[in-house]
Length: 349
Image 1 (cartoon, one colour):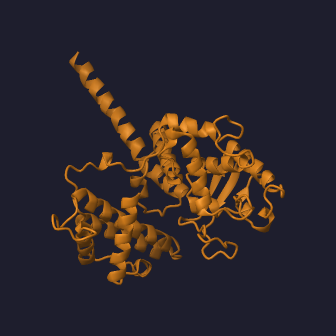
Image 2: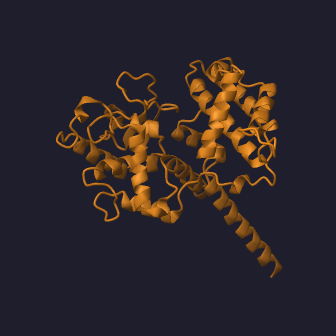
Image 3: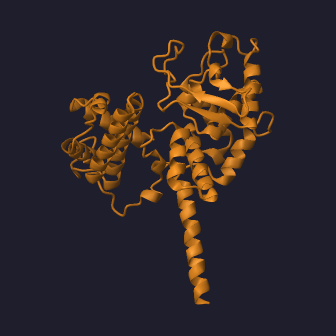
């Protein structure tokens, strides 16, 4: 985490020193030129502090810095593209983004040995971790680490994150009017709200993805309904009736980002088996499960990726499906590897 933050600081300094405004560059569909990308790659190879024994950092560290920089630029650009109204202009911007990514790859620092599949990238949960997580977040479970007053709220919040793979900002920004639990199936709307007058938090919960409607199964709908009923108890949530947000803190105010993180930290501290858990791991886990289901259903690959982009709120041309679900891809590849070996053995018998 510290390395990623250091890398993010590097890209912010680079963009500032070169006068590069990503929002403006996205609007003009120029992004970074090949010369600017070469300069960025060189910056990523330079030690943070001058050192007498070396003038460049390790290839793997330079690659992490550069990948973080490119990811940040894409993260900044995609919401801008998503807000472009004319479909042809939006399509043109997506094509320009893909050209930028090809340029970026052409000058990226190379890692010796190319260990990209085993380099410690974040993955979803293992099967045993998933079963433990779903069990201990249930209200009343002996392993539930939360106080009695918080169990219903935290169950609804964590189950939503698990079942829909929603981002922290999407969950914290969810309003009661975004839920339609009476329909069959129940519906949940993720609505990007920039500069929302209702949001007085220090870290506003604006969604960084496209708006979308997602169906909700009976288990999650029941958990949300139970929480909304609990939320109305003023003696336990005194100010909850004063704001429109679904998830509130113990005072009834809209939940802050640190409040969400505290819930995850409490779960981790109680169950060391979940030591790597964070809210974004649940998003990765959703994508792992999606890819596994896609493999089981034998659905057309391109169609499944388009559906995945919709469910996650990514643009139609987003490359994010390639970044998520790597654990499921590796497992599927190894199943085929074993089958291939078995077929070869049978042919030799």
